[in-house]
Amino acid sequence: MQGSDHGKNRENAWQAAAAPHSNGVSSDSAPASRRVHDPSSEGPLGLSRRDGALIVTIEREERRNALSQATLEAFGAVFRHHLSPDDRAVIITASGARAFCAGADLKERRDMSLDEVRAQLMRYRTDLAWLSTCPVPTIAAINGAALGGGLELALLCDLRVAAPHASFALPETSLGIIPAAGGTQYLPRIVGAAKAREMILLGSRVSAAEALRIGLIHRVCDAAVAVLEDALGWIAPITRGAPIAQKAALRALRAADRLDIDGGLEFERACYEECLASEDRVEALNAFAEKREPLFRGR
Ligand code: COA
Image 1: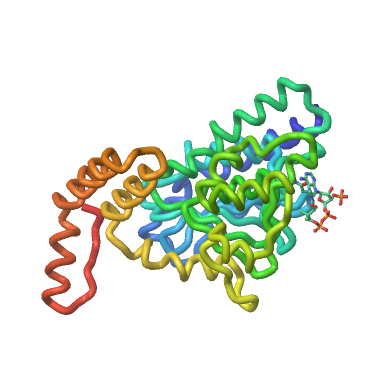
Image 2: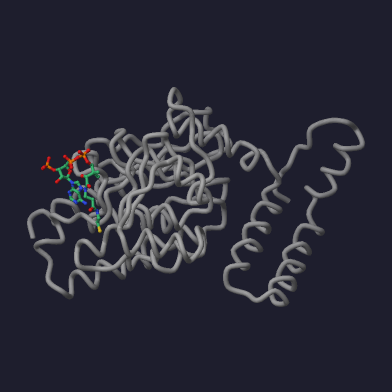
């Protein structure tokens, strides 16, 4: 398919240009808002680092940031090649103000065989699902509509902040399919069984205010503030915090989704143990006694 080849070429260019630290810039030495790479004319994803966060921007505004094959592959490449041990958080956002992500690229899908559709669905697991197991917190900064696979992308993240005009829906049943990139599993865990049934069976669209009310998102930013700026300010305590403790807390929290209470409490103890041995724990106690801010080194 010509369109798919074109997408692959664009992604290859992006991968080559965005090799980690290829410009010698690490998170520690980078100025606060330095871009690692500006891919606006090259690939489906933009990659930059700011304030300790790796920022991944879907750059397909003309298709409302829909997830093409190349976009999914590029997400996989972020994890495999670009996530650095210095990154303290990963923010997923998108270009323009209309959509965070309109879900699967329905134009691309129209030309796909059944096997290609199946393979694409697997890509959500191989190339996107890392967001739910990423060693550092993942944040969706939702700049507009999050529909279908776009909402499922946001559900994979640990935290969700949205612009006030953002909207949310899983309309798959109106397209003859189901939300199978984790939607039927993650949504009930986040908003509860009743609301998930309503959203999936009716395909109903939820406003940002309603999403906040039902716990689908954590925060609605001020209309005058870009959602990415809001997200960066909001997660500052994470990027300033103690790295070992942040990672341990994240692992323990995620374990709560899959373990029973006894297993979960055991797991929590093991995670605490990792913090006990850290220099940062001692530094926090010293800083408290000396009435100063702690300087965490991730050791
Ligand atoms: N896949 C491919 N292209 C898409 C797309 C998708 N999921 N969603 C939107 N586009 C394209 C449109 O076809 C249109 O292309 P065109 O200019 O060549 O006609 C372009 O993006 C702009 O779309 P438009 O609907 O005019 O933008 P909007 O800002 O008024 O509305 C949405 C944005 C996201 C609300 C709307 O496009 C929409 O509802 N899209 C369908 C989302 C969906 O059902 N996803 C479920 C997937 S399972």
